[in-house]
Image (cartoon, rainbow, N blue to C red; front, side, top):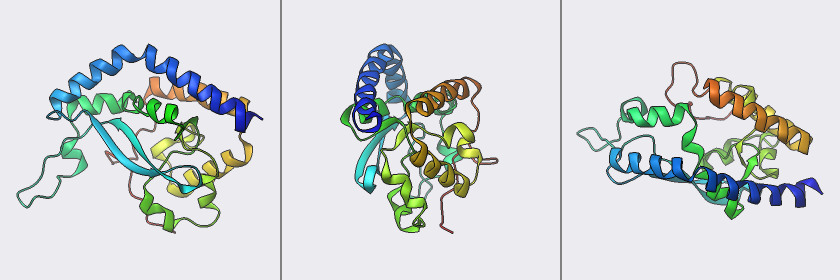
Amino acid sequence: MYKTIIKPIADLLAALIGLLLLSPIFILVTTGLFIANNGKPFFTQLRPGKNAKIFKIIKFKTMNDKKDPHGNLLPDADRLTSLGKFIRKTSLDEIPQLLNVIKGDMSFVGPRPLLPEYLELYTTEQSRRHEVKPGISGWAQVNGRNAISWEEKFELDVWYVDHQSFLLDLKIVCKTIKKVFVSEGITAEGQVTTTKFKGQ
């Protein structure tokens, strides 16, 4: 009953309330990024959701679109703006995903939605992470986030699928709030963004 009825309703109500309470910050960040990114404050990308159904995730755009003389995007480290670095450090870039929660594409808690290109790289066990809705935060995020290996992340994701409950979700939300304040595990060591998953 929790997974099928209570959690979806709680997600919707919490997302609506959260968006309302965070609206001043939402407007302020949107304005700042509109200026910093030449009128492009948002970043959208296709991601697989529950049962690997593709949806469009929305986040604040923390990197600009600067390219080299050959027309190729510069490395992430060169495109991450000062404002974007602050927004990523404080996890403010996740706020627009409340819209994804309201639409029903995501939950507050669940495995993070990754790139569609990874779908064919997962083992049968790893693909079980798509048995539930993806989340803004998840069990892997509060146990290392981007500072742990892909294999460890997937093990934690599947463990969550098998142990999902109200108390576990509440624990993840509380730990997420704590980790946001200490800015822990945002990037892998020596990386501005996490490295790509290349399969086993």
